Amino acid sequence: MSRTGGKGFPIINTSKRPTLKIHRQMNRRDCNMAKFRFTVGPWNVHEGNETFGPGIRPSIPLEEKIKTFAEIGMDGVQFHDDDAVPDMNNMTEQAIIDYAKDVKAMLDKYGLFAEFVAPRLWFDAHTNDGGFTASRKEDYDFAIWRALRSVDIAKALGTKKVQLWLAREGTLCAEGKNPVEKIIQMRDAFDTILKYDPDVQILIEPKPNEPIDRSYCGTAGHALAVGAQTVDPSRVGLCIESAHSILAGLDPAADMAFAIAWGKLWGVHLNDQNGIRYDQDKTFGAENLRADFNQVKVLYENNFGDNGECVGLDVKAMRTQPAEDCYRHIINSKRTFELLLEKVKKFDYKFQEECVKTQNFEKLEMYVIELLLNG
Ligand code: XLS
Ligand code: MG
Image (cartoon, rainbow, N blue to C red; front, side, top):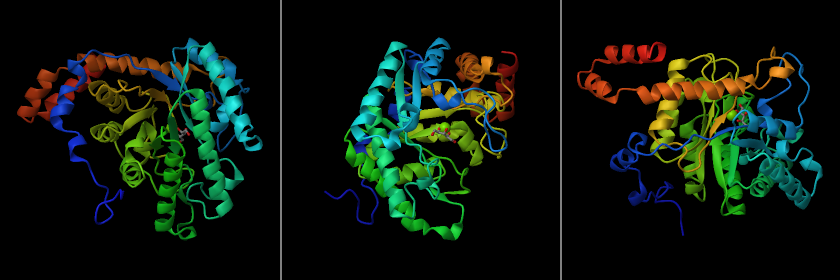
């Protein structure tokens, strides 16, 4: 059966398209409120290394991180493939699965679950020129091997979700790749993952730049478009990261809303970012409180979490933070989310409606500012 219409456009089943009516019936304000579930990754407690300096805090063993994540109120853990199975390049496929099962037992011990597994396709020399968009066959094959192992690891950890941050999928040298060919090659890689396991769900985490300056799939719109061209668009969704939207010059809450409108917001990476600079992964709420309020608002209003979606915190401790207090940025991010949630719950929708009717947005803006500062 062909999966595309006459001109190569995907056939859209109109009976399944989201409508305003259905959306309104499902609005959180009319429903029982489910608890938000928080997740974080082992890389979020790092040694402090960055481009201009090496690590300054000692490495913490995975089990200690997992134990502390549970203690500070996390519900689950996000993994890169080699966070879970560090020496995977030198292991057999069965040994990788067996090792991952031990990590699952470790999670069970502390009452946590695994949210997703992400192939780390930016460290190894094979990924110097990208993974799914690599030009050398052996590099592309390596990327596919890692992606399929991520599916295996995800299964062993008890999750269907594989997240793809497309770190080097693009180029530093504009003439270094044929962009059209490489974009199609990237779609073909997604197809290979989807065909490998009928249950796997891909979450694309778009980012416009860094480590490369030209991403081929830099925004939510790009990611949805590529997903729509795969063998099974119903198994391709999005993880929107606040900082990545800001780096693209976009508003994170609007990106989240865009994904929600099509039923595609399957994960978020909340953090903060001071303008269009290097990727900062600052503590959620540390820079753009009103924009962060609106991220919590859009998640709350739209029942984010009801289908198992998690509030991921992709935050990084400052390099100055001492080893004995290097989880503070995670604790603070969760706390800020909860404080903003209290504000969201106080939001006066009647007042908003009146302002909208009379188009008095100055009045509405001041109301929001007072709500955030006083209220
Ligand atoms: C980097 C990404 C990364 C992913 C996980 O910018 O945010 O941390 O979330 O691979
Ligand atoms: Mg991220």
